[in-house]
Length: 48
Image (cartoon, rainbow, N blue to C red):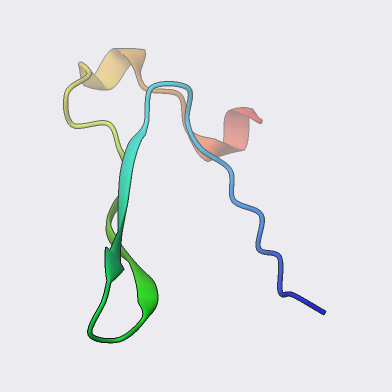
């Protein structure tokens, strides 16, 4: 059975994952980055 992981993202959050051939695995460069948004427009996780 495969492992399934579920994540929540903010509506404008940007994430990047990439394949590492050397390790034969996926890696995460950044997760849910909202630095491009003004702070007052960013929802917090508690709003979900």
